[in-house]
Length: 356
Image (tube, rainbow, N blue to C red):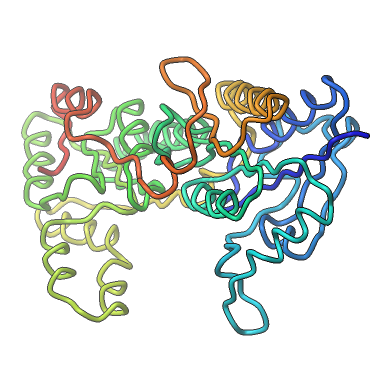
């Protein structure tokens, strides 16, 4: 009798998810004695026992597709909205796992998915995970699939903004995703030749940014490109939040931070400033060749771990090798940009302002 494996995608959609699903499925099918089913809409689909069989036909033609053919949600097994209440439904997911006679479950997702998968592993399920996130903030892996595609999209945006900034002698601010970490902003800012890069890891000073822009102006450069991660924060704003007790008031302070930065820079530099917010554009579309290869490599390695019945791990890439990392080591921590990272040194060497 064939062994049955379940797979699901959880959290935000990311380029490369379909390539990873395909790699897990095709490797299982090629090996024989295995079948794969995909739960629809993440843990919500597993709760409601909604799934499809992922045979060779279902896996055909999805390598280059963005998003996820299985759908996704941000529902958590232990905090599931049910009838107006938030309930712990872990036991139901465990029951559905066993009622479907699954031999294992593969979860594709970011930091939250790693934590939720670890909880399921602690509940006794055979679980493996793959790291996907455009933010590139999962620990113990050099890179997560989806990041390269997002960085390419952001870099292309920086490239396009150069011409209009130059034509109108403007300051243009490009906001990338990156709530807690600045990997996309740092990578695309360097690749696109930004003049200022602002990151959540380094609190910025508006006056320092203005000084850098005015220095450029004195040197005959009449435009400036600023790349800012959505989670970047000024020193002034950080103090306001620290002194504010009310959660809603804190969120209000943070809500329009990029627009407020533009207004402040206009005041300090007397130069016209415009804002472009990329948003979900970064998560859509065809994955880059690198992300397709990375997703495929991680997916096929995951299937090999299934064959060996080695559970409770996340697939990762470290020093150009695919390795496994225990879920307990990746469930929780965030991979921030280290203060001594070589890309920060590179930016400073190039004269790029980090708002310090």
